[in-house]
Length: 209
Length: 207
Image (cartoon, rainbow over all chains, first blue to last red; front, side):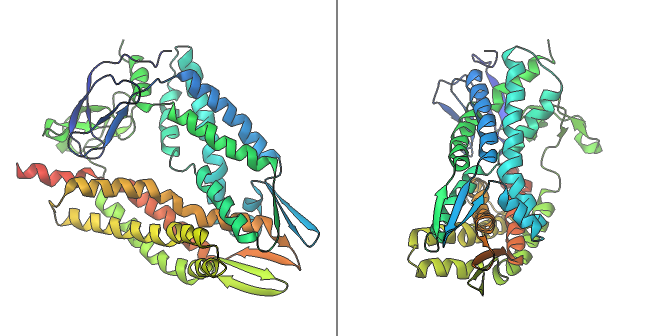
């Protein structure tokens, strides 16, 4: 895999305090820490590109499943209300709260979707040893979306809502929710296996022969 | 202690490469040789941007807590809930762990974020040399926990989606939710615009 180490010993500036640190090749589970402020500069480990790719592919399938099947059902006095993952977005929009609808859509569906497909689009050419200019722009988008992809917060929201409604009615979990929970695991595994430090070094090799 | 700036090097905001800033004084922009992003020694206008976002967040914090975030209409009786009243109600109905969780995510974390950001901005403004390492750790903490405040917004979106049984029971979102969501987004953006290297810059000037 082209992203694998050994990597050259380099000097990097710390993101948090600007201290120059020498970074060396790290063993798995090792991390390098800034000598001045303690910020984590790099993590060692097997950047198994195949793992990023496989988990991203699984996440993409799970994201489709999570959106296609019922997410939760709400049962009260013989009446059943079925909700999908995106029903909240639709309902908020219908009630005139388009700002909320947009934020929920962005953080729980759109940002994860772009991040996962981005990882897939980056790892496929890298595993073939290829570099394209669009990969630079995509790499920046993927790293920026990490904070805005909030599926795990959403899942915690599911738990809270169930607790809130359990006194009022019966809640049934749908296959969409199961897929969504699995999606959180696979997408975290995918992004965790993707280290931006060797990625940018890989992209750099294309520029200076 | 050698910083990148003292050698005329700028760390790229996007790819992290440290590269030489040619003629930084002229005000001409230069680009990262690796990824093409604009290079800056420090995030441009970091302090004024963060201040603006923090002040906006403070202002919206008021309607976020005073206006109802959701209204439960159960058997014809409507009951608007603010963030605080929702948490208190959960405490009273016995769901203490969930109430505590919601209290942390919706009340403690946004407040803590605003206080820490304000404190960081003031300390940088007055060129404080007090424990830069701890202040940097505080900065990292608010960057890490900020997103969890979206919890309440997701809960509202789920409740609104699930409880739509016309005459029997319905839940609607309230205007407070927009203000609250804005507070979360604004503080996340404020944390992103703050440059933690400003905490350290005064330490160098001493030497």
